[in-house]
Length: 294
Image (cartoon, rainbow, N blue to C red; front, side, top):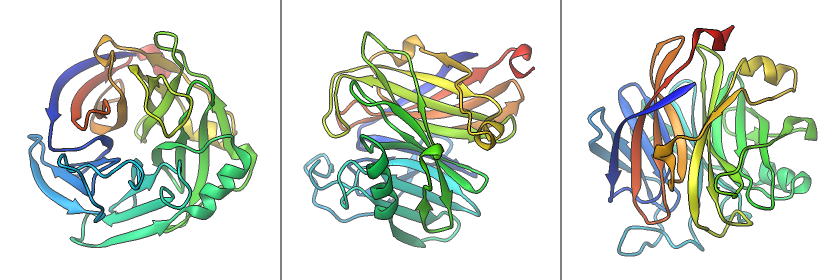
């Protein structure tokens, strides 16, 4: 697997980018301490802001950490909806979900995922949901690890307005490499149905829990092949990981598909948030050898 940086841009007016999706010709970015969803065109210009919350902010338009909903995981769900989820790191406050119909202006619903998060809290040592992706009738969640907690891939059932996880067999512990002697933790994911690849990102942040920030060392990108088959057999494994130089010192938070070119080639979009209130948007080119899919 090869990864090349094609384009990047820093947005000072998009606070703390934590999730990204692309639907039709629009790019959507959420921030974990922002009241808004940002809509961009293909020229990376902000063309619309959609208010999700109405919480007090500072002069940088950032919600205080103690009261923010902490939207961290975002995915597209049929037919035309964007689902954003809180991290669950604070019960009730961050157990929220937002479901927005991208095809119908102002069709916005608020969801309560407290039951699902409470189930996870009863069977895992820490809940810190950072990534989500839709795979058939499942929503795959990534529970972020740190210096003291493991990374977990969680299989949940989606019934349009609710998420459920039924048993410990639906939770898979995955080992990721360190960066500069710091454990890496999941931050985002997307499924590529054309080749059944799960693409994920993770970052190394020197912290021991899901609430406190720490020094950021860098990020990685990985893939899982034949992902739906792996889910069916409850045997999830990582196929390949790359730690590019252009991710050094960056906390890459989320990825989405930009353009499927062919089986061996795709471009993706990624957002990074280095805890300074700004957001970096990147376009990346991924390529694979012919042998990779054999």
